[in-house]
Image (cartoon, rainbow, N blue to C red; front, side, top):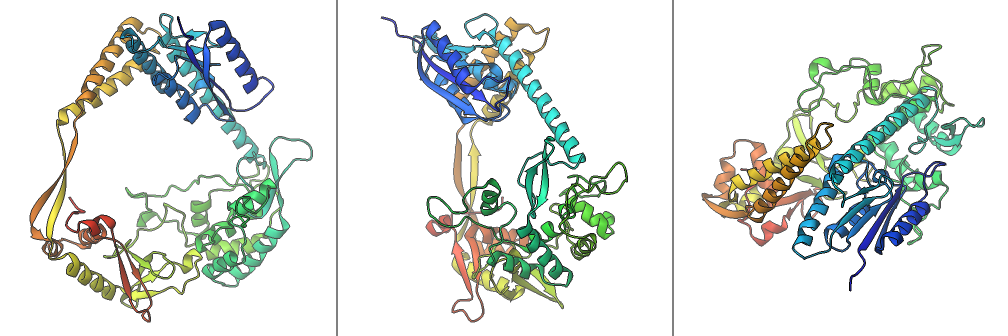
Length: 543
């Protein structure tokens, strides 16, 4: 008796349109195909609303069933429904079919089949690999053209003062359709949020602390722009969790978030580019160098927020929608925050201290940063600037560093120092695997060339796969050894060349140190890493 080949079906629809084939239609065609071919359907995978340019769990799951001998046939409605990610995905299909064919020759599994119905590609036909590679390349290029057209369309709408509809409306606004049916969306003022914006703007101009305002906004449960609470409101959904009955999170405001929202261009009814014309000099870490800092408040604003789109008729910023703030107030706020640069554009930080990244406030769990005043250095809690309800605890830097160092030496200083060394056997095997993998990738890519010698390339691919399988069978194993340094940890710590090296030893021992007010029974608490508690001599953080 013969059994029917087991088939797994895969269909995908990224977006419903007048010319697209629905999920139901794709399934109907594949079910009819299975009946004609005499397949037994064991699974159907669907991706509805998923782009072919992204890795999709269902597509991978369908291929895994073929690869793991849970199915004999993988049938897809069309290759561009299967994937638009190019050669890499076609190589996965080819390798899976090739492996199953070898198993079938040994009598360990039935003959496999990959079938792209619309293109008529079958893996039991001569030269199917090149057709799959060609289909993959065509699908990827079509996706690139679609993305390019979409990007150009979005940019045109933005330049015309229209919102393309991607992402939530900015704080202070709601999104609405144009009355005349034009594509895109327009922004209309949300009166409740606008009232909050104008109130906070007046207080900022009067000199109120951004940190204090952030704490107040948080306590008043004013939803942050992308908080779960606000997103639910924008979608017209309930603002309570259906499972717990608790209100959705409104988010925690910080001083930086206040400056970002209240100095943004959209509050003037403008749309801005993400890029800026400023050619700012940066070092290798992407930080602005001292010789090319933005010199004016306007330049600093542009460096952070980008340039507003201009009206081609007037050359002035395009008034795309109703403003929430007047220009005078917005400029005053911009001047207020002119010294704050955007992420990745801050000035070089001063050198880190011994406990930078290790010291945390015991009351609010915020990190403690080093500040200097009148010749003294302190570790100060960053909680208030992050909108947390904390007093801003601080402690003199040398005192805290001496206290932590003394505790470290008392606990670990007399223990023998041990280095943890990672040994890899047969490094030449690992190198050979890397080289063969690169050759295999290049060979598969050559299959798409118009003048490709398909038989020769397929023979080369088969040989490379066999060589890789042989090498992976004897792949080197990694061994971990502990090497006695002949010193105590106290001696190693004393010989450290700088605070960076000493910080490494402390970080290997402690997860963090928590600092409490002077009135607390215990001023500093030490949270030791679990691995160190189990075996205190097991670590060495620096090579």
